[in-house]
Length: 587
Image (cartoon, rainbow, N blue to C red; front, side, top):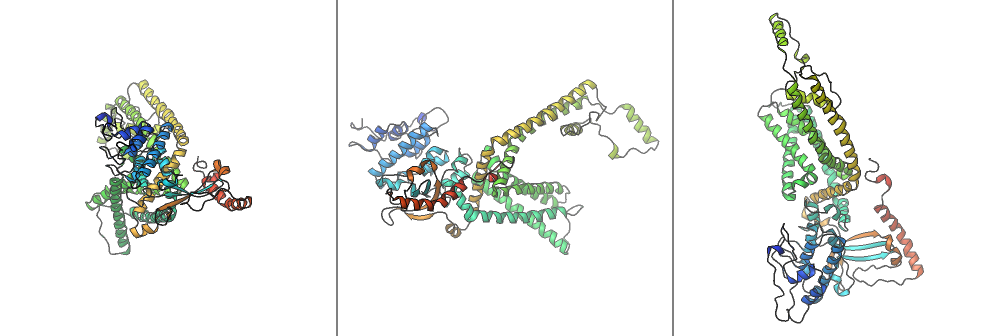
């Protein structure tokens, strides 16, 4: 067909061949993409290099996707699929580099501005993504396609340089920003554990984020102390209160202004965060849990301020709600500490999971049984009303209001009484104004069995199971929350300081100076599964792939002793002592 003049760039434009929610098969709409996505390497080779008509490897479909984008789309993270996709990806990349050295196929972007690497990060294709960031080409001609360069190897110790282009959050729309702020990205917690992202985040935390975080923590503690002092020393009566020209009056006014400015700052920050992250309803409670609480704290305080200036004493109710949330939001800063951060994540997961489900079922039982019991409770008998009338006519003193028992003939009083049964403080004889005594006691005992005995014990069992289930997941969520904090703090840095604190070093990776200069990040790992084969191998020039495998026994022995300290250090870092494990000491 190609020999007879067939169009090698013909497109499949039908709806079945495009990305949609219905049944279909998207393969990039082009013949080269179809051959690649169906694992036909011989067809791919023929289309890319034949004497009749060669394909343009940079050709894009209606979505702006090249053949590499199409391979990312069809990847599904299964071992079989990942194996053939990574093999096909590398083959196309290598052939394109040899046939068209001037073309940088992997840097091409689609209509959404995503390269294949960024598309893999956005769609959560962790298997292909890990292969792409760890790709190291052995062919000297294709060395520039590598994103990982072995700097030196000795026994189980590997020192590698990772190309930071498109990865580091120093760049706009980087892979790290896509994963961290992409609330709809699948496998985002696992993808942050892929090197070099894991070590890169730790490096940013140690360089500047930890100091900025604890400075913010100090300022929030000061704000919380001022807020608590102002709320505790509020004046009684109808607001607004005049400002007295006394030290105490000036201090009260200053504290109120500081609290107001803090609330305005939290609202503005919350709006900016929500607009930038745009989390879905499902992920809002996970990614934006603390942001929601901070936002509610500020909203309550502002509404309280409006009520205060308008002369309503109800401002106190919203003021104390804001104060309570302010103290709860102190847990946000627990993410700066490993154990407290993981513990806080577990509390958050239980509140949003087990406790919410428990409260829904409990409220159904509470209001259902309250409505049934209210129906049985009768009004005050006529004889009692007549007695109270006679007592009033004979100038007898009625009992004080504090000593009068509620009549329980409304649902609010009955609901409050049933809630006491839930916490073990109820009284079966809380009223005698009911009809059908047996039915009344049957409903009351059924409520106690279903709530106090059944629901509470189920909640305890579910929470224990949740702790076991999410102990490892909580560590990943904590790392994700800390990553969000690190990138938020980095955005607040001025450009000159951000450049100064940038991670990585510039390395010359080409055969001649200036040929291939990249900013790389060094990662040292210990791999005991390959230490036998790498013993005595050392290469201190990452631009030269020639490894010196022939070393004398004396040289090997000297190098081995020099590496022992580094091995112990890296092993300790990867395997912390038992007393530092995340939840072993907390459960």
